[in-house]
Image (cartoon, rainbow, N blue to C red):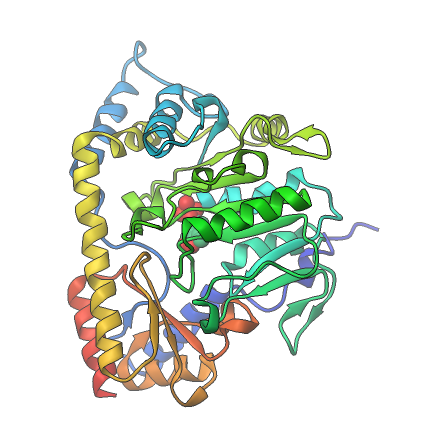
Length: 404
Ligand SMILES: Cc1ncc(COP(=O)(O)O)c(C=O)c1O
């Protein structure tokens, strides 16, 4: 009998952000006169920088004549962009990553979700708790996570690494032995980071245990402190144990344009099999390359004018982050994050549940945030606000929260 993929049926409830959006919609239907400010999902609000718009226009014009038209892009990305990534994101930081180890894609979410395909179904997966839900849900879809306990919100076959305030929201090395370790710094949702020394401990642990780290560096552009690594390849031995994933969404506002990349070093192996070749095969079979126009826009990110304009854009969001952080602290909330990341992580007052606080904030202040429990059991009693709104909305939201 024809059956749907049974692993998909194991996914609990609806996706976190759909629930947040539904609750906001219902509130607005009931209260059409109330204005609602969204400091919830991680989408950017500033327009694409002028230098990137110029690059887009030029690339569009190229498509209009037979001589400069571009059809299918190379599966693994255009050389001009792979080179720009290798030189600017890696070699300039002393990291040894060659252009042909960079796989261009249409964004980090797809890469974070798809990368598990090149590993065995029996791999043990370790994730931070709380966590960006994509890492867990895609492993559920792949049948790797065992059974779900509704009450605790825990999968039987996933190793959870709690990120608690006692450890500045950094995970501790797990007691059980994982095969695949998902790490994301600066972190979504907590906004926490690790120092280079701490990340080196993870690299050493992975090499000792023959585990592989999938390092999501989507928020790298927000790092402001010196001892926070921008890439896992700053650590010694990382080429033997780490895959790194990047996005153009948060540093350059490509959430709607779609561009990202994954680095797989040529020597990286799982049980004697080179993973670079497997990922190349996966890309070649299932993906026809990010659009030429968008890759040209990506190249402009690395131009001197691009860097300057994007630095200003990141600074704009980080001004919001500081405003939220300081405003909430003044109002008596316990807050963290917002220094190397556009996310502020706050403890709910009076030990309220994350969803109760969501409802209270929406009802009393007309502000939408994201309940920490949606990111995993250790996110309960926490709440995430993002700095990606406009400055005016951010100021208005904090004023309303203070007056609550
Ligand atoms: C940790 C993390 N990784 C990846 C992504 C997705 O990035 P992209 O827009 O490149 O798909 C997000 C988006 O919010 C994220 O928070």
